[in-house]
Amino acid sequence: MSSEYCQTIEVPEVAYTVPVGGSRDPVNEAIIIENIGTADVVNPRVTVNGLYDWSSTERMAAEITRGCTTDEEKAFAIWRWVRGKRFQRSASDRSSLHPVRLFNVYGYGICGHTAAAMKALGLAAGVPTRVHEIWGHTISEFFWDDAWHVLDGNGQVFYPKRDNRTLASVDEVGDDPWISERSTLARFTYAYQSKEDNYIEHSYDEEIETNYAMDMVLRPGEKLIRHWNPTSGKYEGSQGRAEMPSTFANGQLIYEPDLRGCDLERDGAFNAAVGGGSPIIGVAKNQDDIFRKFSSWDVRVQSPYAVVGGRVDAAIMRTGDGRHDSFSVAVMPDGPEGMRREVYSYRYYTGPREIGLYLDPIVATQTRVGKYGYTLSFYFGAGAGQQAGIDRLKVTTDIQVSPHSLPALKQGENAVVYRDESPEGRQVRITHVWMERAGTPLPSIPADPVAPLNGGRVDSLAPTLAWAPTAGEVDAYHVEVSYRPDCAWPVSSSLDVELPPSPAEFAVPESWLNPGTIYYWRVRARDAQGDWGAYSPVWQFSTPG
Image 1 (cartoon, helix red, strand yellow):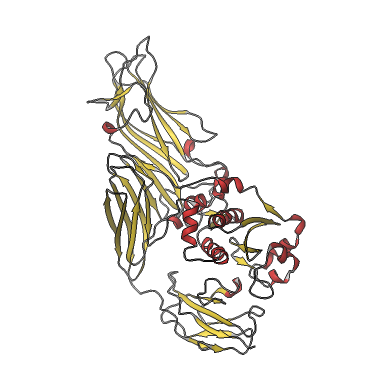
Image 2 (cartoon, rainbow, N blue to C red):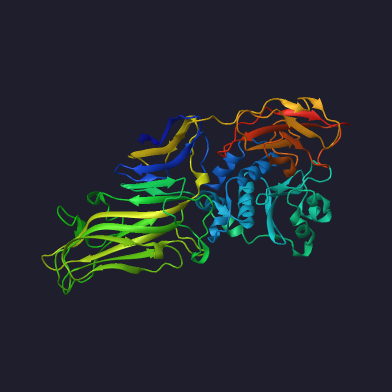
């Protein structure tokens, strides 16, 4: 059974706590931000436990590199972060090269998307970063200590040089094939060596430098619903092909205004007025043989998330059946391909009518230029003594939302902060929806190491590290070996591995450890439900000198 927590907010910033029970992290289902007041809500943001403010490149980079003091630490923090925030699938909208669009909206991309986003994040964090094309692959290079270093976010690999400490550049990997041949991604060795085909990529810069942000305005009667799991089954795919990742979140913008409170002047209405009867929004001055222009009302839908479909439900009215009596609906999507198309016409009858119009073929993103908004135009006319217009309106816009970007609750006490930039008069309702998970707790922390003992010395540069098996059912172990006491990053991608549950040991491959050096390592366990337990304390060992 789902649990809910609701919070009503009337000030620019509110901190509150959401308690979540169970024995492990919950299944997050939805978060809803709803404008229940009479004023616009500008740029609403929700963070949980200090995370998920990805509204701009700068804020995203600040969250990723929080606590980092050097360019090297920032670069590795970005590399580690992007590995778990996207699925491997190509996105057709070119703006998905930008991290705000890639990680908030799409949640999937290939090597070019990853490298471009890493460049944007690196630059925002103050680290010189560039995109490098090698034959059949795109990677990132970060600059620190007067040199360039490969950090491949898509391949989840980097290349220590023969000193097992300094990271190689693209050219250095090409000059010394052994550097990549011993790695977990050896198949790209030939690509680094094919130097005549390799070059620094600048074609992504236009998107990287665009100031994309997750800015939005919720009008009175409008709400943003974001789900962690699929709800509508819609997708964004090149040429209409379904390219749905293995996990795909859907969202909706729902606008259901009190028509008597609509600001027709702001919406650019022509010859329309709010009346006291039916229709609520109708003709202000009746049409005749001299004044024949339709009355009109435009309803804008604008979203920082890519639009993948829409629907209009309305109650309309037409009392007359003369040549000046009419009602029609047209839609025009934003963007260079936008063209106004009529989608409904009420021609031959009179009286009230309920309409439901699907807008997917017109408003959905299906090209290299994503669609992030559209305009609904209502046209109505009424001859002398007659009336036409709208009594009720609901506009539902399906949007694409990456599940990685949503403010997920954890088991226990969650510190939530809501902020917006509304000038005054906001009234917002936030609803968190989740399902608690009971039963067996997470895998326990792995016990003390068996070999070598903590602080002990190994007898070779390719030792076997062993630990006491974790109690309960274990599906896999994850082991990291680092030269840093905080294990901020491993010695190599080859020393950051998942292992079967038995035996509880890791045979360190040859060539990665240096003599006379202290190394640090830690282990965590995963259960059959796919949940990782906490890491063990960081242990250490030294190699023979």
